[in-house]
Length: 81
Image (cartoon, rainbow, N blue to C red):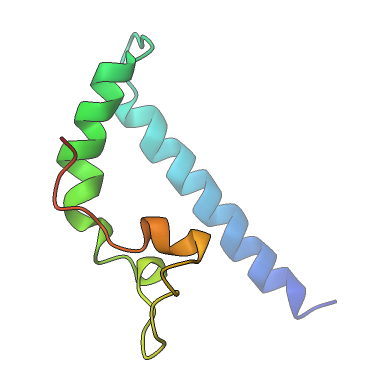
């Protein structure tokens, strides 16, 4: 049980630090984003780096076969039209 205590303390401290950082940068007022705004954020922030995510690669494995449902989203597009 003693071995768990330092780990728990680490995660508690990290959570507290992240919550404090979030609170410091939290806007005074928030509003929901429209679907269009979400699409713009996706295209600008996420899509350009999506191909670099480790979870989007297959490493040394072959890509899924063409008849596989996984093949549909195998390739990461350069942009969404």
